[in-house]
Image (cartoon, rainbow, N blue to C red; front, side, top):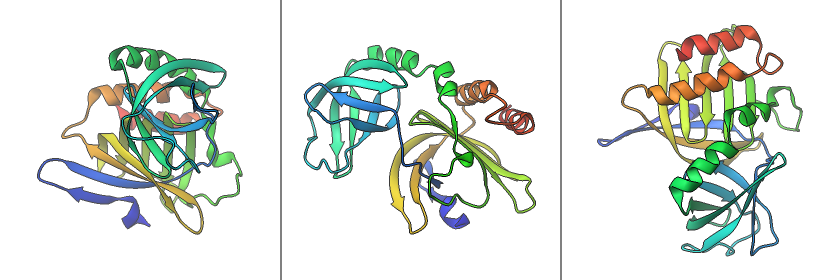
Amino acid sequence: MTERRFNLIKTDIEQQEKRIFPRFPFCYLTFKPESDARVYEVKDITHTGMQLVVKQAEGIFKMGDTLQGSIHWLGHEMKLMGKVMWSTDGRAGIEFVKRAETAESIKKFLGEERLVAALKPLHMVDYGAELPSKLKYWLRSDGPVEVFVWQHQDHEFSHFQVLLLENFVEWQDGVGLKTGRIMSKRNVDTPLMDEDELLFRVDQGLDDDKLHRVRSLVGRIPANLLNREVKDFLLMKLS
C-alpha cells in the first residue's frame, strides 16, 4: 500500500508523483446545463475549468461542444459557459469561456469562508466503506477541498496532504514539505473501497502562494472538525 501511495515518476522535464486517496461517493457541488435535464457532479474545479462526472451518459458530451448552465452548491448558484476539451465514458473536462472573468466569479463563489463552512469530518461518518487504518483525519468540502492527516503505528503523525482547488501541499515525516499542482484524478476501484489516483506536478521549490492559501484555510478550520493540537501541528509544519 505504501508503495502505491508514494509512486514517483521522474522525467527530464518535470517531476510528477501519484497518490492514492479514499473517495467519498457523494457530492453536493453540481452543474446543470441549460440544454439538458440532467444534473452532473462536479468532480474537480479550478479557476479555469472543471471536471464533470457523466455516469451512464456516454456520448452526451462531445469534444468542442459549448455548454452553458449553472453550478449549484449549498444553496448558491453561479452561471457560466464552458467548452468540452475531452470526454470519456465516465467524465468530461470543461474549460471555462471568458476565463479571466469566470476565474474572478469562481474565486467569489468558492470563497475561503464558504469552503471552510462546507467541510465535513468524513473520518467520523459511517458511509459503508472501510477507511485506511492509518488515516486519522479526513475533511472534505465536496470538490474544492480535502484534508488528509495520517499517523504511524505509534499514533505520531506521519504525513498530511491538503488539496485546495488545483493546489497540492504535502508534509511527510523525515522528508518535509512539498507543493505542486494537481494534473489529473482518476477512479481506482478496489474490493474494499473506492479510491482516487491523483497525479500532481511537484514544484521545483516550495510555492509560497500555495502555502499561504493552505495555511489560511487550515487556520479557519473550527475545533469541532480539527482539534487544537492537530491544527497547531499542521500550521507549524506549513510555516
